[in-house]
Length: 159
Image (cartoon, rainbow, N blue to C red; front, side):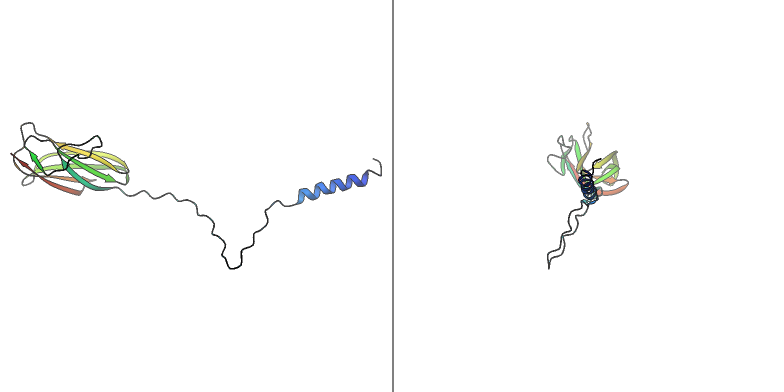
């Protein structure tokens, strides 16, 4: 190599080495006097799922497509079908809901259950009917969730 080109080559290589060794971190920010630095943003936490619960029970003569009683009542005729809509909220992988229907002094008329997987507000429907007609008197439906009674509704049948 020629002697007059050597200093230029050394200078150019030196610049490349210096540039490669420089840091690329952003400059540190200085806090404003009298102000506290802003806290680091917290990681977004998932809201905890609300626990399952029966929020209410309605009885009536009909239910809609959403399984809710359309006109709540406690007075029925002898040939009416009696519906109970169990309204629930919260989450649970599996809950056994049971409706126990009784007459007057506790005589069992019917008992049925449904297992549901709850992921939020929902309605579960139970019903009883008797083509030959219900005797007049006082009736009761008792709703339990996983074996624990959570609601009771009384109603009357008139002739």
